[in-house]
Structures are given as structure tokens and as C-alpha cells.
Image (cartoon, rainbow, N blue to C red; front, side, top):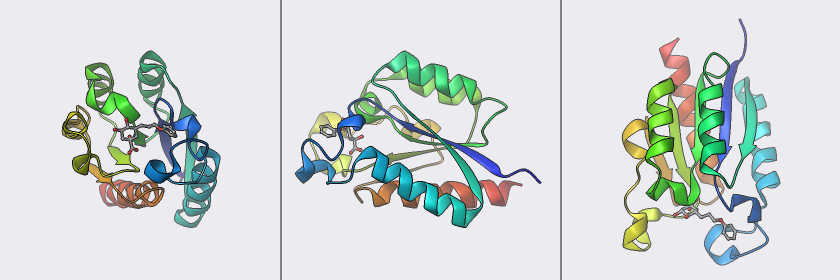
Length: 149
Ligand code: CA2
């Protein structure tokens, strides 16, 4: 049987990780996070595809192109979490199980970060564990997909 394939999406400014604001977002770079996720994916027996964009439409395009290619989506939508009806609609449209992750605890920060447009169309949200949020999110997503099949 083919390996489960998961699309990992990183939203705007996450390409700066490790180089700016380490007190808020940690010292690991995006490449470090992707490398750690790849190691975990190998242990779990799943395949990952990574994509980062600073553009809302680029993320929407990638979500749409996940249809028939990926069984799950792990997404840190960055600031689009709090603004993007388009990303929410794309996730709802493809109906691919999606887990939302955040490095920081969005509920502990400014009020404008407390609402997520994505949460209602995600199977779950992990927030506040730094780079570990991605690992926890991936593990939860894989377990969900394995229970489905
Ligand atoms: O905590 C998270 O993962 C966020 O999704 C990060 C977003 C923020 O807008 C969300 O409210 C919570 C911001 C990502 C910006 O990433 C940077 C990385 C390094 C330096 C500056 C920004």
C-alpha cells in the first residue's frame, strides 16, 4: 500500500524563523523544523511535501492542488490564521483532514490573534509548544488518518 502523503504548509514570514524574534518564535530555522519533521515522518512511515509562501493565493493554490495528491494537511497559516476566509474556504472545499499548528500560544497573545478562521475547518489545533507544535500536530494527524483507513 502507498505511503500516506501529507502536505506541510507554512504561511507568511515563517521563512524568517531563527533569524528574527527568537524570544517569540524560537531559534530553529524553517529548514530545521522541516528536517525534524522529515525524521519523524520516516519513523511514522509517511511522506511529507513542504511549501512556504508569503502570499495568500499561493497557499490557496497549493491547498487546491493537494486534491488527489495528499491525504492530510499540516498548516501553520501564520498571520492569515486571523484574516483569511480564502484559506478557510480552500480547506473546506478540498475536505482533506487538516491540522492547524502555531509556534506561539495564540490565545495568550494580543486579542486579534485569539480568533482563527482556520480552526472551524481543522480537525484540531496545536498552539504554544514552539517547534514541537509541528511534531505534535503531525502525530495527531497521522493517527487520525490511520484510524480513518
Ligand atoms: O505562533 C505562530 O506560529 C503564528 O502562526 C506565527 C505568525 C503569527 O502571525 C500568528 O499569530 C501566530 C507570525 C509568523 C511570523 O514569523 C516570524 C518569524 C521570525 C521573525 C518574525 C516573524
